[in-house]
Length: 173
Image 1 (cartoon, rainbow, N blue to C red):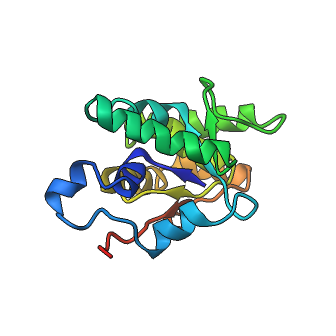
Image 2 (cartoon, rainbow, N blue to C red):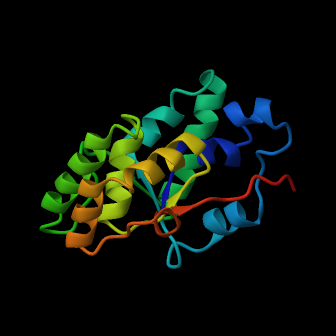
Image 3 (tube, rainbow, N blue to C red):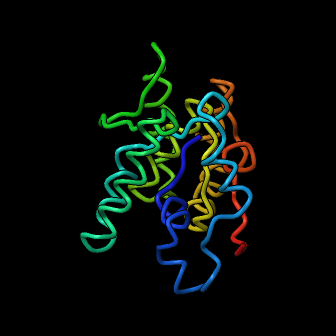
């Protein structure tokens, strides 16, 4: 699984959505399952772009808390941090990633930060955990593009929103 920065912030009880929906950004059953399932069952990939976003959100105390949270899960093997400029790939998959990335980029529907996450998730067939409406809507629009459809079909990759995203509900406990 790939988890976006907003979901991590929700798990930590922070983030922009907290002001919009007080009490709505807490652990729920889906997020509890995601973070508490053993690493042998599910692992979370933390792309460098998301890691940087998390470590730039808030003051020094909050940044330290977020860093400690991630480090604890890294030590247990639950979170894998990808610090490379390009996401982890099995041998021979870089060309696929580049084609997917280029096709998605050409649509102009995804933000600069979301684009590598989307291309990585699709190429590696990793579900993306997000409730970022702009990201999901942008992906949905991009998936309607003929060039994107052709690349995904050529490589047998998921081509619909529900096979790419898992959207956790935003319910308070």
